[in-house]
Each structure stands twice: as C-alpha cells, then as structure tokens.
Image 1 (tube, rainbow, N blue to C red):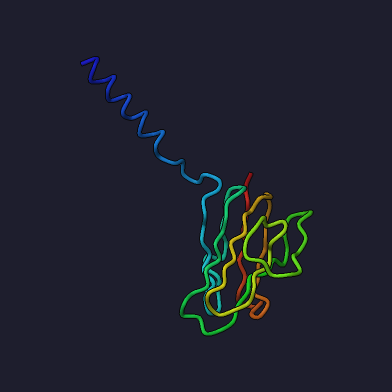
Image 2 (cartoon, rainbow, N blue to C red):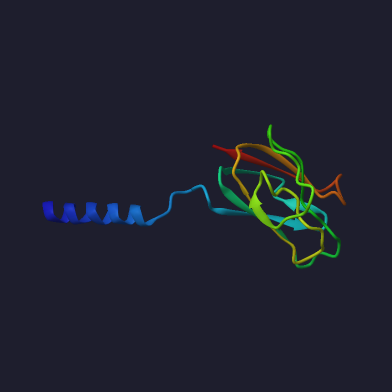
Amino acid sequence: MKRTFTVAAALIAALSLAMPAAGIAGKTKKVKVVDDYFAPTKITVKKNTKIAFKWDKTNLNTHNVTMKKGPKGVKKTKKPCAKGKITKCNKSASGSIGINFKPTFNKPGTYKFTCTIHPTVMNTTVKVKK
C-alpha cells in the first residue's frame, strides 16, 4: 500500500512539472482585426506576453492597429512595424488581409489601440499586469 502511494505521488509530481502554468508570461494571445471591429475589445495579459493581431481573411476594408494611449513613458511609434517590444513597436501597417503585427507587451499598464481609418468603431484595450 505504501509503495502504491509513493508511485502515485511521484506520477502526480512528474505530471505537474510537465504541464505549463495557466497564464504564464510569454504565451501568445490573439486579437482579431475584422471589418469593422477588434475582438476582443478588452484583454488582460501578463508582462512579456505577445499579442498577435490577426487580420481576418474575409476583410474587404483596410485596417491598422495604432496605439492612441499607453502607460507613462511609452511613446507612440511613428513608423509601422511588425514585431518587437511594445515600447518600440506600437503601430501596424495598414491593409485588408495578410498584415503581421505581433508586439510583446514588456511594460505593465493600460494600452488603448484604434484603427485610424475607423476610429469610432474599432478600438481595443490591453491591460498588462506585472
């Protein structure tokens, strides 16, 4: 009986080490860029998480993802970029499909994004926890 318990405990310990922790930093999350909205409109992630903004393959309209407000010390990027730290890359290229925008959120705080072509209907908020 004691041996069975020891083997079971060892098995449980091994399995717990093999499974990733839920919400671990560095995991990639997705935000859809669709005619004419972002989904979800609010998302909370841990520091150093990547967010892949994915343009829907059925889009007919041109869209972009542009930071309109970020935490203190984060300046708006002037030129579009595809990936990198959010503090240096917070503006996507514009297009209807096939755009790649995957920033890493390396600084905690609240980020507000818009599509500058459809600013009244396309907005999303990213909250980054420590």
